[in-house]
Amino acid sequence: MTEYGKNAPLSYNKYLKVTELIGLQETLSEPTSHDELLFIIIHQTYELWFKQILHEIDATLEWLKEGRAFRVNHSLRAVTAIEKVIVSQIHILESMAQIGFLEFRDQLNPASGFQSMQFRELEFVSGTKDENILESFKNDEFVFEKLTKRFNAPSLADEFWNLLERNNFDISTEDSRVQTIVEILTHPEKYADFFIMQDLLIEHDENIALWRYHHVLMVERMLGMKRGTGGSEGAGYLRTTLAKKFIPELWEARTHLKSEPPATAGG
Ligand code: HEM
Image (cartoon, rainbow, N blue to C red; front, side):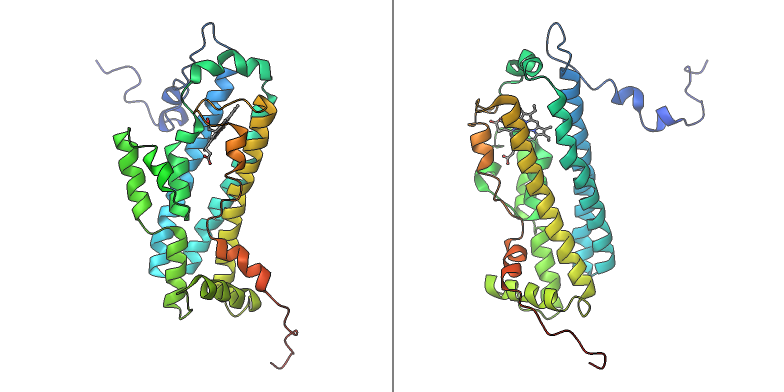
């Protein structure tokens, strides 16, 4: 006798493992607090999008090495499109009543978004590497190993500069990297692929900065200045992260850009 449904044709639910997926939300509150399901689902959704963003960025790193600018830009466009969704997604949490959140918040202690492995991977692979953050994962062997690999590997920023160097731009100092971007911004058509690439990279940077800002405002709206479950000062700590930038030279170059006379029809 065959197991029930075993030889059934592929279906939507089977392919996407919907039964397993909707069984992954285990609430801690007893009796179950109404908003805890939303809290779990929103975090799990973030982690799925982080997985997809990392998948695109990992491919992008290879394409940067191979000098395939079209493919790099295509993937970076997917990254920034997903990021637009995850920035706005944070506001769904603002539909939770503050008092409803407090019903189950204490049980989350000492877990915190601070420990999101994939968010840290995203920071490291994009170019912001903080040794203290890496060290904070020391007690989890699997995560620490994964993050150490990311920490030591070339980032998106590194491979972007390497590609420009192979295309005869001087990227040896911070100043020369800024000047390289100024040159690209001055002549968008001449360097069309690199112009689009730096534009997508600064958008990636901006999207994550926007996420940080929307997240801290949501946290303050929810908790005021209460301490975080992860042990930090809460909104006070999060405000210190707002200035983080993956590729500061991209931002700096805008300050040094000067207008050029418009190109004439003949030249
Ligand atoms: C009611 C909802 C939320 C509250 C009250 C909240 C609160 C906080 C607080 C207070 C911190 C600082 C660390 C600590 O001491 O815990 C933090 C960090 C963090 N949270 Fe949230 N959070 C919420 C939702 C989310 C969601 C949906 C995500 C999505 C992944 C997220 C991701 C993060 C990340 C990545 C950090 C580390 C930021 C950094 O260190 O730069 N949080 N959160």
